[in-house]
Image (cartoon, rainbow, N blue to C red; front, side, top):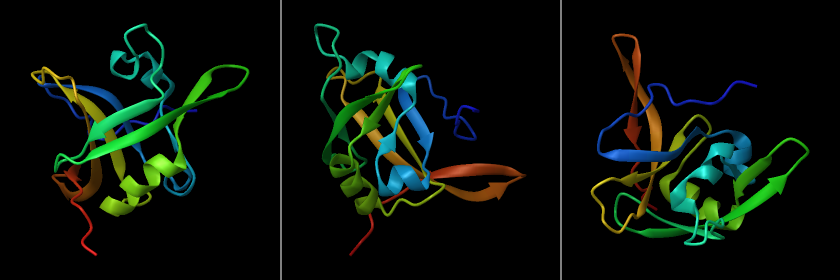
Length: 140
């Protein structure tokens, strides 16, 4: 199975991306399935090197979201998921839909090492290249 990548890949000298993923129906309606390499990122490990149960993350407005990390194990590898109760409110708040994307990242100059989360949506193509724009909060 091919690895899901955001197109174009987000690159910056000022951030370290922990996880980036295009959203599918399962991610939106059931649970967010993170790439396996998410488990190797130091930001999701505690001081003793164990996985954190909760992943606090901040959106574009500084609102704190706490995602509960769960590990599904199968014969080949561990599959990290964010539980529905912790990720659905974020999805609903930003009106994310199938084909949108989510990135978790850390800003390198942030001394606190706070994890940031953003929802992204494909926008108009310019010269045949898709542009991802940050999704703003849905107003009710």
